Image 1: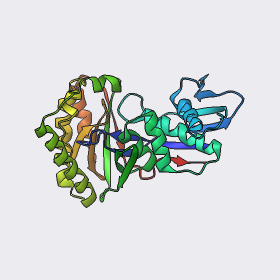
Image 2: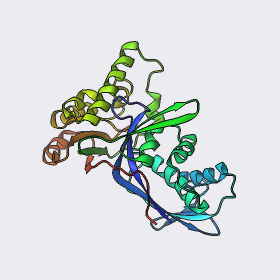
Image 3: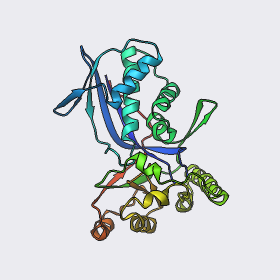
Image 4: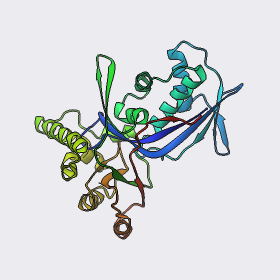
Length: 290
């Protein structure tokens, strides 16, 4: 039984803890019943007990009051860890879906989201991995409500990944406990503009729609080259934002746009080494390969 789960880019612009999107970068998880649960990644074999994939797998059995079936979980990782691209979310979703398959339980994506949020807590991270596309998720009296947004136009997502990790806990620690009314209105207005622009194909509004006063500037202080890269990307694409808690910086560009040559010249002036990927939107969410 093999599952493919996409990377996610959360906190989309002003949509802090609400908006996210899925990308065509994947982790794969293969589940095989065994006498003892192990994690297999390349040549490395490790105990499963403290692994997030297995913990999510076991949590799902607990949810449905079943005895946990031991499994070997073979992992193929392409999503970099602690870079703001949803590697943890992919592990959580992969573990839950693996349990559904072992339990021979009918796949229910809304139900899977509920379990994932009991583990992870941030819907903008896990929702896109489950539903694909752009998602908006809120919690109402313990029930999670997700809307899937399908952009009118096709885009290229230019992904700049630095050679250092930024733990979510550290990135959250720099955020203020309170915000002004002006900042709240700023983000509400940009969120409305961003969603409507994606749905209507109004690319000229994306740069403004991606602006944020809730988290990006605060977290940007933890990321060398942040201001320089934002300026470069805003000058050369439809707009950019900090992916997840960072440090990856994401830009939205027209499908046929390439900035690789310009970036290769620009990156020589940067403090860190940045790796560029040109990705596209994943529209399926997780997939069961067999």
